[in-house]
Length: 386
Image 1 (cartoon, helix red, strand yellow):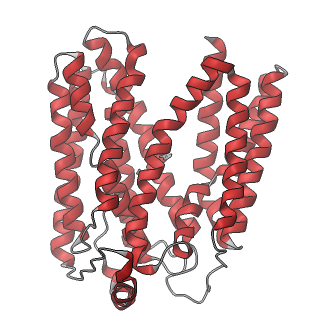
Image 2: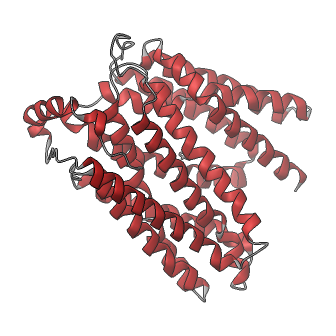
């Protein structure tokens, strides 16, 4: 149990370091060729993960493990923002918006399957083997990046280059609040299990149901084109639906009912994350992309962490089943704010892409609409992802 607690501490420290260093590391990626910078980051992460594996196998002092965890966090900081930024050079302009929804889906799948895979490997072959596999994953990522075209640093003369504009700050704030609300729901699952008369140790299975729900929502928006008309109002509708879908889980009186409600409580997670990323994309030029996306992802990570932490505090005052209702209220307020923003902005540009064969005409529409995107109504992946 002591080693498990220590492992959780080290994982938390690595995650915190990655989030804190994200904007600076994103700016570092922006100053060089993006693909090469990401490859270097992956190789550095593999190096520190490999050293961490050796240290664990050698039963090194905790201070050594702590140092390596911090270095690992620094090496992966900003890397998710860099991958989003690299989409600019990886897909045709006409498909760039939809690509952000696919990327949000793949991130969510990784957040769901990653911990399960590591847990299974550790249980079957031991912690050292699990850490070795994680090292190999970083190396594989670096090698696979060779298939992506290089992305040179953007022109610094671009007036939108890397600027933290009001719309972008708004989107990041919405993303943080969304992640905070979902963190309350996610962190509440173990307590709900105990409240329903079952062991909190079984919470992992029910957390997986949340991941399944978010993946289903991601599959829908990844393969069905989503309108670009009035994104703030679209976001408002998604947040309102998010709030409604959470309510049944608070009313569940049995484990079976609770599990079934979790399947659709997270359906809106990936659609909202993809919408937020796509709207940030619409605000950006060709420079400063890594930093801006790193700030957005950092806001999501901080919001989610705070949500899980505040969940424990709230249970000192209200019942576990009532905690998700805080998220319901929060999402309802966000929906109202987005309605106001959408009505004030009144964006009417629509670009529909139904297949890759529409690339040319849709790309021309995208370029024409780009001049108006300083006034886009922003909306919100949240993880790691995860």
